[in-house]
Image (cartoon, rainbow, N blue to C red; front, side, top):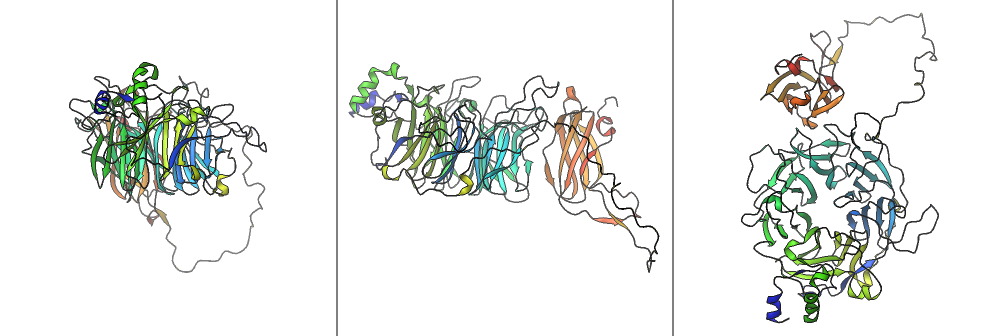
Length: 627
């Protein structure tokens, strides 16, 4: 390409609907590997029926993740009635339906998430099941179901489902992020907590159950999550009106880092990430999509229309040894990616017809660092370009910010073979070098691999072979009262006691009975600033504690479940004057044996764990309200 032609193209753009573009840097491009459509066959309509030979799109794919190159998973909303919502597995040869339960949503930004915990264990963030709607006259609107439940797969079955009733202060919020450090340490994050609470909704799986661990003080929604080099990195979406309880700063942190080691996780903010140009509003940039490989953490974000001001521009950053640098952005804009002069002339003559967009306006939908290379693939699309006639655009960017190559899929060769558009680029994943997968908005898959290595040794694990159809019940389903009375347990059928006989007299003095002390004692409360309740108490042993405020039968406020050590402790709970509670309950669970004391000691209590309803005066004695 001539210098003149290159200068003329500097204001041009990445083209979403043009023929496949040639690599700019042929030395950096992969010559052996190429992208091709991977046809996925329709699932059999009934058990025992052979698979169809007709390739289909799987519907909205929310996530695609690999444990190994020949062991992968994707979660989809499906394309009923041909493809049900659920989970599909890759065995190195082809994709097949693994579960028709625990699928994702069907709209943009939905679709579910996958988090591998072990070779045969993983979690999905899934759409909830209908069941609560119409069960109570208190529901003015249908309960939300999008990506607010969890399914735990292990040993070839769904072993647990986790959900919570809607319209409660502690209801599960929509979750966009999921990551695991192992079978006993997984994290899930999502939208901001409901008012008046401040923070981002977050759950931690500790190997035995889920605990609420909200990201404190900042109500920015968690959009992406990645376990990387012993830390958990979270990307958040900055909104102008997000509630925060800390002093506002010009550039709020867009990456949170959690150190999960120890009794309590440590929350930090990643600072000094170069993202914005002078005068650019933080909310004008979308959240950073995250990926990591070879000791490098990559992030890519596209523009977002701010509540006030112009949208931002495509930005890429990376983190090496704790330091962030900007690869693409205001200081280093992405250059146009064009092919030969002939292709350029064709593009110039059909700019409007081709539906071109400038590079800085491209929306980032995914990023995948390629193992073994200092580069990452980025999926781009035009704003709102998710129709069936859209084509997928992906680019590979080096660690220096150079665009090594770009691909518009399907390629020219595939078009000549009769392969039509399959939708815009949506999700990327790279399990190995020269081995990457792309899912489009229409649920089709493209595979990057050398021609002779498009299949691998088949994964024969039986846990990924059968079809899983059963999902256990969870708290999100309505509790149906039994139709029949409970079984008779009065003891009338037991053998009668033996009367008579001789009692053996105990030798020595009377045995002193001992009983466990109360887990809670010294409970006091006071009202701070008119709306914040401070509850102080003493814990006999380490325990999990949560304070609930109820108005009649509805929960109007609650604290997260906290693991507190023994000693004097306190909880803070913000109350809404318009929904002032009528009852406080302290939910406790001791995490160790309670000490014992003599039953002759005064004021002995045997309350150890469970639900403690606090006396009425804890609410109103200092609130200035009528009792």
